[in-house]
Length: 198
Image 1: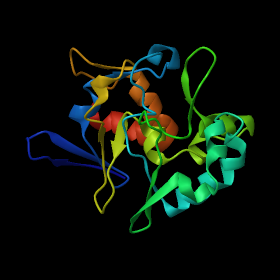
Image 2 (image 1 turned 90 degrees about the vertical axis):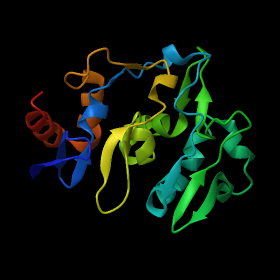
Image 3 (image 1 turned 120 degrees about the horizontal axis):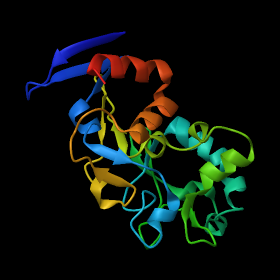
């Protein structure tokens, strides 16, 4: 169900399926996930602490033997539990290497940084959404937790070559639409676009 409210800055606040949508932020970004663009540049597999819940952790642990094909560093962990640091309340942080890169990231022969969880899912004809952490699947978007979750854009999005600030914040970029479609579904996107007048 779709409804509109007013935010603190006087802009219409859109709520779709209980998720508050920061339209101003969504309209401000252009995004294309092109791993070749990030060669030798900051990428989304670094510079972040990836938080996962217990259910996501259990899914990832089941894939650990499969990701060793892509990232031998996982095999260096004597116990797979060492990949995760508990931070309380059923939340864990995925470990990173000395370069602040996620331990599940790997570099191809073409020097592209990819996710071993994503690659392992594709190998098994599964959707990467069923394996990767939620925050990774929707990046550069963010979805806050809590009773009134908000869909917005990562504040550091311009630090990465796959994202650009839109010169005129009109409409939602096709790359952002695709991310929303893949993660939240076609009906969510259709309702969002209809309410936003896009």
